[in-house]
Image 1 (cartoon, rainbow, N blue to C red):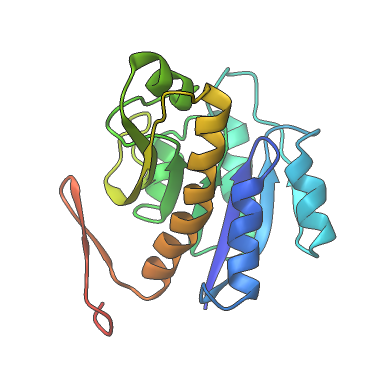
Image 2 (cartoon, rainbow, N blue to C red):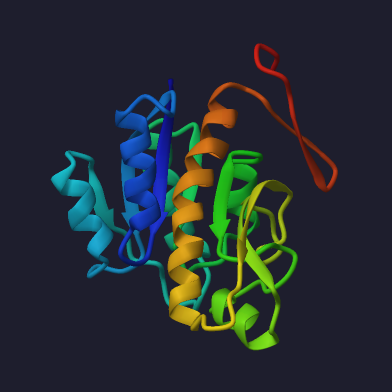
Length: 207
């Protein structure tokens, strides 16, 4: 059983998908703590209702990033809860080198596009405006680049002629809720190996 810490900034739908997958036995793990850079994030109350310690941790004054004392406080709490895997679920801060080195190879993120296409904010709208016929979502390990770490799993979603950015985002979100728990379970089984830019998925029973 792995111990999972989740970092959130908003409503926490992917957080809920991970918590539910753990409780239903689809992930051999337990969400032990939820942290947010926003005191008003709806995810915090949702986590508390599910009996999970959840707290606002001030992110410091550096916009979009965790650095210095703020970064150290996040690391301290995750250590305190003996977290094996850190999952970013709509966490709107860039993880920096100190944090990455502390949890090297143990930080995942979900992004609502088929990376490397459309990194950054409003990826669904980016895809819709560009006119692609297919979009989707990506689970990847986190590195120092923005949405650029080694890819673990992806899911493809068609873009229809009558789509809006909102309708496309809703269909992508359903796939996010499916593949993020799958990726976490592969990690829990010891079946993910990072080889340069690629993630190799080992057969069951190996690790």
